[in-house]
Image (tube, rainbow, N blue to C red; front, top):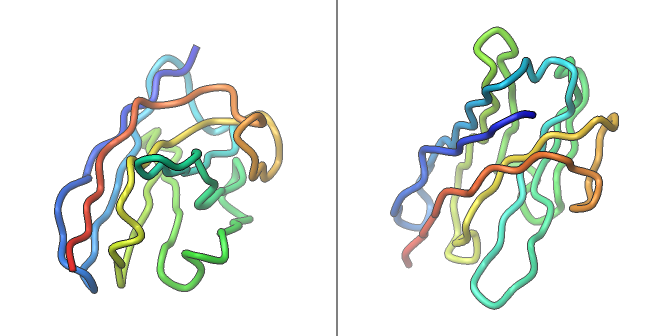
Amino acid sequence: QVALVESGGGLVQAGGSLRLSCAASGRTISRYAMGWFRQAPGKEREFVAAISSSGARTYYADSVKGRFTISRDNAKNTVYLQMNSLKPEDTAVYYCAASELLLPTSYGQYRYWGLGTQVTVSS
């Protein structure tokens, strides 16, 4: 019922920044918590960040804490992931997702998923 499309990925040097966007359609995302996940080659999909439906609460994986910031603009039906101080190990396909739960951090807790956007960090 909710279609999610990520954008903003690309190639960046280590230490650089990227801002990912996730545009939703089909219905408003204001009722959903939103999250970002990533999947590197040969690895399982891992949690990156989550934000509650109102934006009042956020949670980050330890690996990105202090470097990444998740935010949302419910009026624009869009979620963002600001990524600073990027490292080569951040290279992955990044996915946004929507959940009915408060602040979910697990793959199975999200109902709707985008198709991902590639982020490549060179050394």
